[in-house]
Length: 199
Image (cartoon, rainbow, N blue to C red; front, side, top):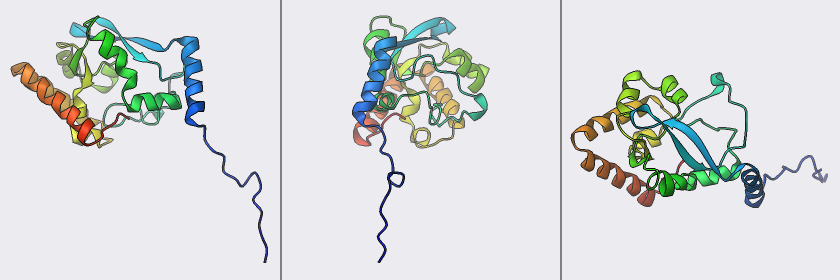
């Protein structure tokens, strides 16, 4: 009987541990700041600064547009710029905490519920001019309305996102408090009862 011994080359390499991922993220954030800010259009198209916990590597090159694919939430699929520990922060929305505790209550540039903040490039490349104009009549939201719809969060079909947001804006124009309350309860119902997490 022949016994084959595994060589070092045959043994699969283990990926980095959570601790190693944390060290990478902490080192990058220590050098370049734990809070990342970017300029986006807000109410009436006026530029505002939104803040997040850093999850991407600093000063990375932009992705080749021809290779970018978006999921049903308008997020880049398998974005290589995000650090491993950054993905953990994003999964549980920890990266959004500066918006909840600073941009919303102090700067008052965001609402709790609304269409998520987007860059000018994202608006111009991915959405219609009509939808962009209507969205700018309201402040962006911390909790994006798209999280309330299963057909969007469970899909990689980006085309449904604008349709859902248009429906939200139409309902909000007639009954804003009721609409935002319903969306808020749906989102938290999915987080608590269905274990929904960010991607």
